[in-house]
Length: 300
Image 1: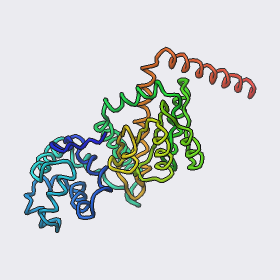
Image 2: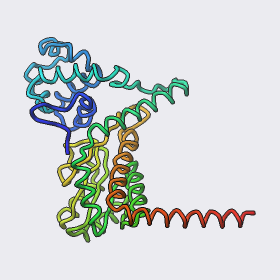
Image 3: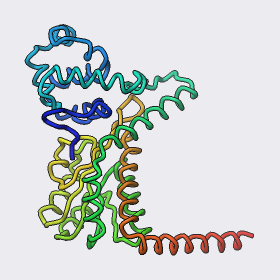
Image 4: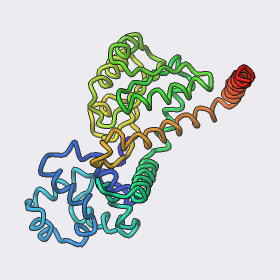
């Protein structure tokens, strides 16, 4: 589920991504400290607790509580992990440059590419094979698979349902709260319900997931926040990553990483059901090829 470990904390490879993911669930004082970590992890790694207290304008006790909230035993362990993270990554990779209104398009291409590559890397670092395997197990035996999402996350829900349909599974996407609640009211044991929400606090996703869970369905959360309401409702949590900027709100910045998670689930299911999924893919590919061939002949 979450990548936090109460003894050792997040691994250096995904420490910054984990801090960003849990940021909304922290207290205001802890959020201020976390933003220092996100903005300049090297500075925090070099600072004693007294030095960091002076720089951040927070008490040493608050810093220790924040370190523990992030999964570490104390500030020393957080410093060591940050030092390892800085050594593991270049500063540009830790803090991708924000887009500015006057950036030339060459910089736009470079910065967007770097941000999306980092989102994918951060998401991959937090993906648990065990959690992914449990979701695949539930999917291959599910009576039906429903995916809920609205806005940018709704596009991810539609993508997942379309992929499931291509391999012959009963997958449905719901981007409307009324229809989602209608489907959730009919959920029962043996069904798999997937909720997609960047914040994990979208009522249009939370309410149907809760209703489906109450009906006995297995629930999955795809979210940036492993401590969100949606995550708490889910049997299995997969954490996506994406850094919000002025031109890329959190939901848009996270879409690419949510699609990565969906692709991993899809491939896992296709592997487990290779004979039927391969036959379904060939049949659907042939149907589309035939249609396109006939369309071209009609145009001529």
